Image (tube, rainbow, N blue to C red):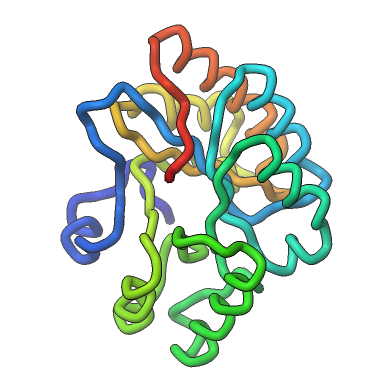
Length: 203
C-alpha cells in the first residue's frame, strides 16, 4: 500500500521532514529514487535535457559504485543528488547503528545534505539522528511508477491532477518503473511547461 498524496497524519508524525517546497512559487520538483542504472537513468537524463528541466536524484550508493559515469553525468548536467542509503535498506527492519552506518557509507559518495529514506519510511529514532545532518525530503505526490499492477495511464493520472505549486513528485529510476516512467515523464514535463511551471532541483 502507498499513498499517492502525502496524508496529513504522516506530515503530523514527521513535521521535521520536508513534504513540499514553498507554495508561493510556481515551481515543481521532479525527484528520482534508486539509481543510477544504465537501463533507465540515461533515458531520464535525455528527457530532462530535451526540455531543459532540472531534477533531484536520490541515489543508492551501490548503484553509484557500479555506474560512476552515470552519477557523474547527473552532476555534469546540473542536477542535484541526494542520499538514499548505500543498500536501499528498510529502516524498520534494520537496527539504528547499521542503518546510520549505511547512510554514512553512501554519503562518502554523494556528499549532499539531502536524504530520503528508501520506501519513504524510517523509524523515529533513525530520523532523529538524520535530522541533525540532513534535510529529509519526503513527497507531495507518489507516482506509483514502481507498481507493476499500475498501467502507465493510471500512473499519469496519479500525478497530473495532484500537482500544485511546490509539489515534490517521486519517480524511480529502477527496473520496475521503466514502462511507466518512459510513458509518464515526458507527458508530465509537457504538462508542467504548458502550465508555466518551472522544473527545479532541490537546493
